Structure formats: structure tokens, C-alpha cells
Length: 208
Image (cartoon, rainbow, N blue to C red; front, side, top):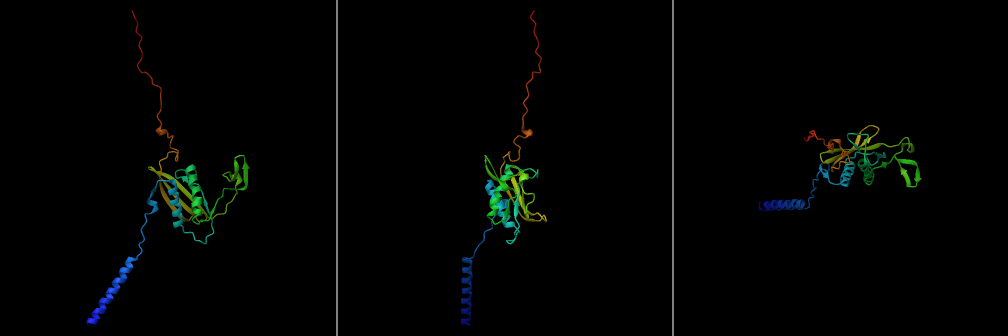
């Protein structure tokens, strides 16, 4: 009986040591804050967040040979209007998505290289110099909108044949620059300057 009790004690001790060892070498995976909940103080950080999300959220397979064409980010209120801010966003994503393994294409390439006194050029927005059709499978679109003192950036990659969204991302960028939305010369903020007039009529005094 004593031997059985001793064996049981030793077995429990060994099990305790084994589990203690497992706890010692256990790997704890930290829970990271969702990037969509973070407000970025620089445009570069916001762009990196969007690129990371598009890569992480993508449902594209590694064997998919379809290319992604990037279009300019547009003001959410005017979907056919962009700005320097919108163009900077799209241009920056070319590099960030390329290094993350996306198969990209740029439809702005001319049929030839144009040369003038200012330099040599290949990309253009002159539709007469572009190909009439572009072979691609996916299109990246993006919008920006003002939310209080911040700018909300939304991007998604769409299958241009089915309209299905294959990836999406959003980021908040802290910026209250009025030039981005063209509100610096808002008429509601102007003060009208008028000529001062004297409503009291001057009276001539006659001397007797």
C-alpha cells in the first residue's frame, strides 16, 4: 500500500513538473490593436496602414495572374473629381502594394516615349496618346472624406468583371488642411467690407 501511494505521489510530481515546464516555455501571442481604429498623424503612416490591410484582407490567390490597376482617390462627395492629395495617395500605393506581392499595371503608358525641352516622358493623362483598351482583372478605387478634424480614407480592390470586392481597407488621417477639400476660400467665412456712410445729415448754420 505504501509503495502504491509513493508511486502515485511521484507520478503527480512528474506531471506537475512537466506542466510547469510547459507554462515556462508557453508562447503568448499579443493581441494587436486593429489598425482601422487608429488615427494616423502622418500621411505616410496612413498609406502604410491601407497597404497592409489590403494585403492582409485580400482574398486573391497566389496563383491568380490578374493585374490590379490603381485609380486616383476621389472626394466622396464628388466621385468624378480628384486633387493633388488624391493623386499622391494612389501613386504611393503603387510602390507599397508592389513590394507586398500584388501584380500591378499602369494604364497611363503611351505608345512611345515623348521628348521635349522639359525632359523625357512616358506616362500621360492625354487620352489620345493612350491605348483604347487595357487588359486587367482588378481595379483599386479609393475615397477620402472629412470627419471633424480628420480625413477618412477608404480603399477597396474590385473584380471589374463581377463587381466583387476582393480586398478592402480604411484609415483615419489627422489633418484639417482646408486646401485638400477646397474650403479655404469658403464664401461663408468671408467678411464683406462696405463703405461707411453717415446717416446724419449735416446742417448749414447761417450767421446773421
